[in-house]
Length: 118
Image 1: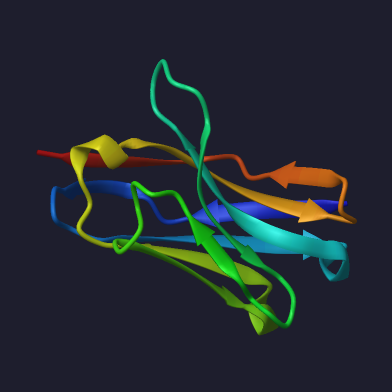
Image 2 (image 1 turned 135 degrees about the horizontal axis):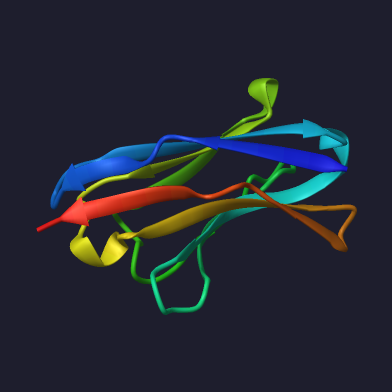
């Protein structure tokens, strides 16, 4: 089992920055990928970014956040960070951390609210 605890989020004005953190515990050696999804009211949950928890550390971003968001990892702390810069009102959503482990399983965090005012 893998458990995830998120922190960060909050209210910020457009153009501002926030950083989300996701700490993993449990069977951390079995984690393949970690990342973030987001879900705005009345909309589906969409992928924001992910990072491979391997030596490659390859990353992928949604087109809507490229150049503004950066995902990174701190393997020593079993933590993944999402630095969000130049935030826009359309970034307002609940952000969920996730981890794929043993290839076929997925764990989710509890979600953290990000609100960007115009």
